[in-house]
Length: 201
Image 1 (tube, helix red, strand yellow):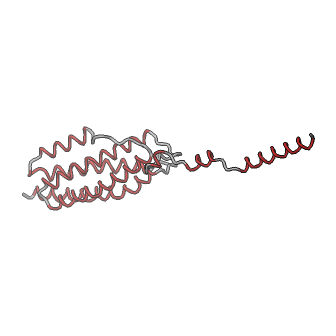
Image 2 (cartoon, one colour):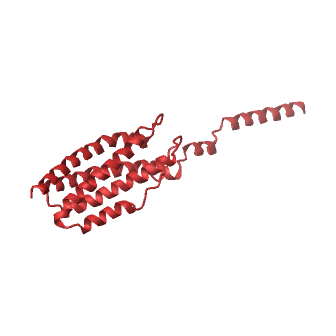
Image 3 (cartoon, helix red, strand yellow):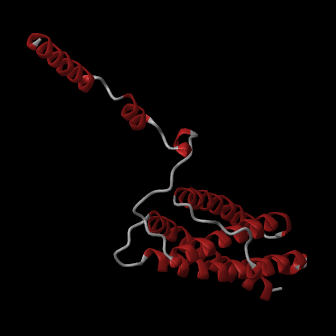
C-alpha cells in the first residue's frame, strides 16, 4: 500500500514538472499581438509628448497660413501680370505644399486636429484678391504676402524659441523658419520693385 502511495506522489510530481515546462500559449499570443492601428498600417499616437494649448494654437495658425498661401498664390498664377510675381507665387505653392505635408505628418502622429478652413482674416484677403483689377492685383498680392510672412515668421520664431522644449513641432518650426524668412526678404524686395515701377508710370 505504501509503495502504491509513493508511486502516485511521484507521478503527480512528474506531471506538475511537465506542465510547468509546457509553453504558455496565451502569454505568447499576447506578446505577439499588434495594436489594431499598427496592424492596419497606421501610426499610433506617441507617448511621452505633452501637447500644450500653445502647441495647438501654433498648429492652427501655421496650417491656416499654409492654406492661405496656397489659395492666394494659385490665384496669382492666373491673375498676376508681372512674371516675377508669377515666379514667386509658384515658389510659394511648392514650399507651402511641402510645409503642409510635414505639418500634417506631425499632427497625425500626435493626434492633433487641423483646422477645416483658413479663417476669416485669410478668407477676407483671398476675396479681396479675387475682386482686384488686373492693374491692382500684383500690388495687392505682394502687399498681402509681406504682411502674411511677417506674421508667420513671428509665429514660427516663438514656437522655435520655447525654452527647454524639444518636440517635433519645435523642430518643424526651426526647420521651416529660415525658409519663411527668405520668403519675406524676397517678397519685400519684389514689393519695392513693383512700387518703383508703378510710380514711374
